[in-house]
Image (tube, rainbow over all chains, first blue to last red; front, top):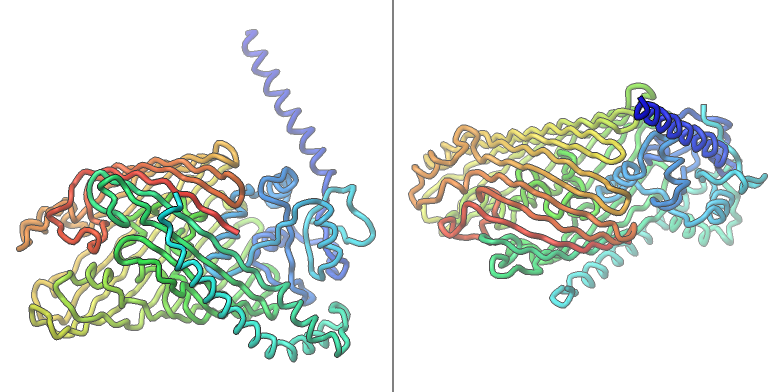
Length: 145
Length: 439
C-alpha cells in the first residue's frame, strides 16, 4: 500500500513538473517574422510545412527565410516539440535529406536570441522564434491558429 | 589516422566546385536582373526599391543570400576477418574508405532552385577517389498553394528509392557506416546512385492526415563503370553496357508528426549490351531489365527509430542468344530490420539484421553452385549480416562511429575487390570506425 502511494506521488510530481514546464515554455517564446510578412496568423500545419522547408514563398510572393537556433539549444527543443510536434533529430534528418539530395535548402542556424532578432529584423521574408523578452516593435509576432 | 588520407581529390573537388559555382553565378547574375525588376513590379510594396546605381551590387548580394554551400569529409577504418571490403582489409585493416562532398544550392528566383553536388569516394578498386558529378539540376515549382506543391526537376538527379538512397554518400544521413547492403548495394552503386532524368514531384499536406510526397522520373541510367558490368554480366564479357530509357518512382507518406513513415518505390531499369571484340563467347547484343520494388516503413519516438525495408528485385536477361544469360530470369529478395536508440543527443546505438538472397527461388545458392562450371560457391548467392553500432555526435559538426558486422555469405561483396569467388570465406566479421566532419 505504501509502495503504491509512493508510485502515485511520483506520477503526480512528474505530471506537475511537465505542467509547470509546459506553461513556462509556452509563455517564454514567440514565433516571429519580418514585418513585411503580412500574415497575422497561420495554421500549425502551415508552420510545420515552413519549418520542414517544403514551402518556398509566402502568399505575397516573398521568399521564406527560415532561422533556427542550434540543434542542441533548449529553446529549439521546446519549439520543435511544442509547435511542430517533431523531435529536433527528425527536423535535422529531413533538412539533410533535402540538402544532400538537392531538392531543398536547410534553415539558417543562428547562435543566439540576439542574432535571431537581428536576422528577423533585417531579412525580408524571415521567420524564426525568439524568447519573449527580445520582442519589440521591429519584429512581428505571428499567431498560430 | 589521417596520415594515409589522400588529399588530392579534395582539392581537385574544391577547385571544380568553385569553378562551377563561379560560372553559375555569372550566368545567374546576367539572367537575374530582369527578373528582379519584374518581381519588384509585382511585389511592389514588399521588396525595397533599389536605385539603378546600387542595383547590380544588391542583385549580387540578394543572390548570395539565396546561396547555400555545405560539405562533408569522412574517413573510415575497416578491418575484416576474411574477404575484402573497400581495399585490402583482411590483413590488419585499412583506411581505404574516404568520402568527400561539396554541395551548392542556389535559389535565384522564388520558384527556381539550382542544385549541384560533387563527390569523391575512395572505396576499393571501383572507387578511386576521382571526383564525380553526383547531381546537378534545375527544380522549378510549377504550382504552390498553401501546403500543396507541384514541380519539375531536370538534370542529373539522385534516384529516389527507399529511405536512404537519395543521400547514401553522406555519412551524417546514414544509420551506420555501411548502409544495409541488401538494399543499398555498393557493388552496383553507380547504377543506383543518380541518373540523367526529368522528374515530376508533388507534395500535399493535411493537418490531420499528414504529408504525401510523390516523385516520378524518366531516366537515362549510368551503367558504364566496370564494377557494374561485372556484377551484371560477369567478368568474362568485355563489351559495354549502354543505358536505355528507364523509369523510377516513389510515394512517401508521413503522419503529421513523422511518427510513422511509409514509402513504396519502384524502378524499371533498362540497359543494352554491346558485345566486345574480345568476348570469349559469342553473344548477341542483348538487353537487361532490372525492375525492383521497395517497401519501406519507419516508426519514430524521441529515443527509438525502428526501420524496416523490403525489396523484391526482378532480373531479366533477353536476346543474348546465349542460354546461360537468356535463362537469367529471376527474383532477388532483400530485407532488413533496424533499431536505433538515442541515449541523448550525443550518443546513439544501432542494431540491425540484414538479409540478401540473390535468387529467392534458390536462397541457399545450392542450385547455382551445382550448375556453376567454375565452382562458384553457394555462399556467393546470399548474405545475412547482423550489425551493432555506436554513434557519437561529438559536436553538431563532428561525428564518430564504431560498428561490428557478423556476416554469413558473400552475396554483396564487390567482385573487383574479391576477384576469385573460390577465395572467399562464408562466415566472416567486419569491424569499422569512422570520423566525419560537416560544414
